[in-house]
Image (cartoon, rainbow, N blue to C red; front, side, top):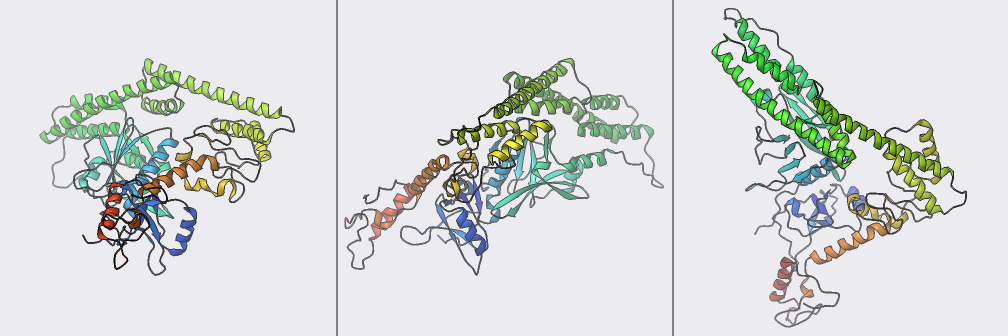
Length: 547
């Protein structure tokens, strides 16, 4: 097999099956900083990158770009990997998943992500994002053609073409691109329309509405396309009849109703279009199609609206605050042109629940602040920091805080020496609290467990100590060390077997003992046995052991 000498620019961090991507700097001066930052971590030819699952190392060059490389095989020869995508963009599907998950989590939403694979299509070409009421399909390359009439809304990569008719019929399409920023890739969403340049936005500027993914450009395009065009007169050409003109105007209004999600307007337009007679055959055909598609759209919107209010009612019953807030906002938008008595009752119940939660949180915050005023002047420093930290965590959950209470919180924060922005880490000095082990473990990994040191629970950052040994980046050393040790055990188990770690089948020489050949090198059977152990991922023996 011919060795693939393309340079590897991306890797998976921590393990072969990790979904945490990493982009290697191209310049030597940047690679030095990169190595210091990820000292103690491991890099892998990740399975989700289409790789072989073996460990990688970094290669520093001053005369060409730096890159990842496989460790040599047991016989010292270069490892042969079948990985197809190796460039800067080869981990874009993992960056898309990470960025979209963080964006949705900030909005109180969750999604299921899948890297759909089709025959002959490499992993990462398509990313499916399944939301409770919508489905997005990200086409990062041209391997899988987009399907416009399916339940999934296509979002196209820069290389995916879209024809003129599709742009005219759909009014706009969304695109996705990723830009390199240091050792990561930044996701941006673009909106492309016919005869308009693509406008790009950060994910934070985008929304998921009942009609799908939306950017600030969508509203402008919708308004521009919804305005009825001025009638054109062509000399020598027979003009349309008054009925034809009226029918065309109603069809445009029906399209506008669908774009603005107005069910009542759409129902009204369908009724008026049906009542028009005396039009030309060509216009009659357009009328029939518009009414048919309009009524199907109305049925779907009514079903979605019914499900939305059922979800809101259930979220209130289950007291799921984030879902109640999100569904209530969607319900208010859905009822902008009319609301039934039962729908009004559901929204009112949701509003009462949110108001009760807000009042309870404010009362709890006020109680904590009043409790701080009653603390003795001389008390345990850890207990003091714990109580101030609880105040700050509670304040992050309160939407509206009075200026007086805000001043109190700021005064206690300064007295405790905590950072100005809540939740941004409790860092005070360099190399404190374990020398930066938190930087070697992703936040989503260590935040899942309790901290043995300060006792905070799942989902909460650690509290800083008053000694020089402080929590760095939000996590104590005791909280991240077990994760790092577990990674090291996995790395040891998955590294390639060395030739002299196995017992030679020919001469019987044990581990670390050289074969009894005239050249002093290993027997071929011993080299092949080490390869076989690597392929089967046999567990490595303890130091000094034999296999």
